[in-house]
Length: 94
Ligand SMILES: [Zn+2]
Image 1 (spheres, rainbow, N blue to C red):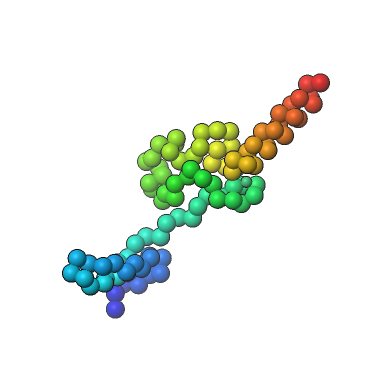
Image 2: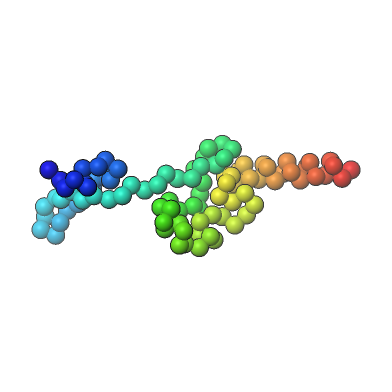
């Protein structure tokens, strides 16, 4: 029976080979889920799957693409949204 703290299923169980050739079970924290596009739900690229504690200490530029709606919409949706915005602006000025 593993130690009480390792009985939790919130930890991943990994089979790892030791240098001696035996396989040993090790316990690792699960990775957080990927960030999703707010419009279409697609996986967002360029965003690391960091735990909140790690995300806190890493620079903002490493956590999302540096463009309007970066880290919120995927590139396709952002492009469409920007086009729509530009057209709306154009209509209101004329
Ligand atoms: Zn999208």
